[in-house]
Length: 92
Image (cartoon, rainbow, N blue to C red):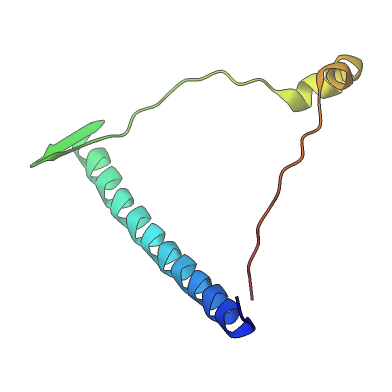
């Protein structure tokens, strides 16, 4: 791929990411409107023509690795393992 093609591709990627960010912000605003309607109506669910929305509390249990490491550093180091990942970044 030529330098010109690389420049075009990178700029297109940045443009698409910008559009995605705008759409995510718009989706968040629409979500907030639906949540506000739920609060106003005092309900956890809304339903319309071909759609249904639910906004409910979900209880889950998660392992607190920071606290475990602080309380049991020896066990933490014995059972932890390092991983390697790759990261792709494009910016201005």
